[in-house]
Length: 231
Image (cartoon, rainbow, N blue to C red; front, top):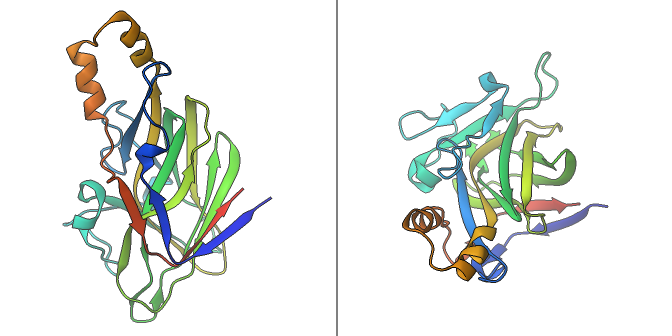
């Protein structure tokens, strides 16, 4: 069953309060997976397929028509593609993300009426561990400019295990533009619970934990005309 949430004002309030740290049960830590630099803790880099259908966006290397502000993206980079259904030999572009954790959040930029008569639709599906779990559809308005840090998918009910998330451009009547920025996932560190019983953590362990803290602010509010589907 799909539930459609249609809103013009979407808020994720204080991600850190969803999973408070607890020494007896382990510590929840937010980690980032950047579109280009990947996960600095696990060294995982997102996989883009087919690679020839994806472009790398930076301040010096931008789309010839759709030109968002690099300074608004995490680490100043993003990946973009436009899927045009019906073109022979074209397959839906995908992004594959691998992580270990209890929650995951996907953030994109969105475009509306960008240039001339160009309207930028966004149509994506999400599969987690081989099962379709959601769909995101944004119908553009006549507003100009871009919206950044838009949460296009969120799942907070995962087992603390290895997961594979696949983001795929969906077929529709219109081309689908994807401006992928980054992923945040929540990792439960069981070692902290054991360390609290055995004594203080080592310096190297503490350093790694601090490095993996999320760049998200305590309150993230996004104004965006979009439809968010959850299954």
